[in-house]
Image (cartoon, rainbow, N blue to C red; front, side, top):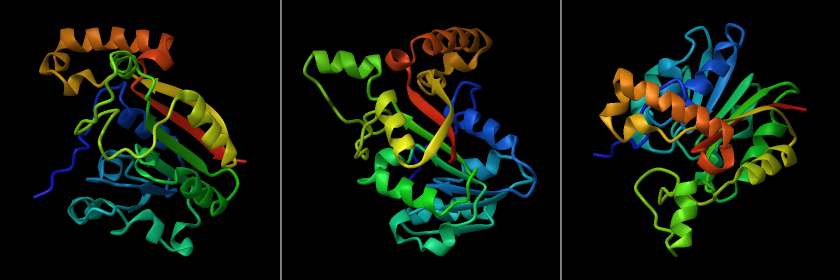
Length: 224
């Protein structure tokens, strides 16, 4: 049995919480398209007044997620028909672009099929994180089962390269936020009151040094 590696990240500093907060501001009945639903966190935890659609290539994950979506396609993004990709108020690509061989082509396709003003929310891991930099200094670039160097990642992004990608695809960036390392997934200590306080301090420090300490970047942008 395949288990989804994408655990819910409930901390207020996580990409999941940030993305959900952006969607919270959308008007009722807005159509949201979730690229790579995994187990369906977005629709399961999100604003229930919105209409959720999604695509997920993993059959098991798609089965788990489908009850929370108005419609979910179990196929790869490249197999989607243009007609099914049109007309959304918001597109979410949460930790998806790094898994694509040609993220520029995929993002441009999505942008071209939406109306002006459509919201795009994109998160990617920061390959320039200090942990990766230190490993490179010692001559190591080892893939792992999850995280920044997840072995399924095909592309890597820095803050600068992410901005370039988003702007080149015809989007106007509204904000860029950074997330700290998800310490609550590393140790249960960070789920205690003292641990959460410590995590909050680390999150503040991360905001001051985003390119060095950031775990993920989250872009909120709109089609020009």
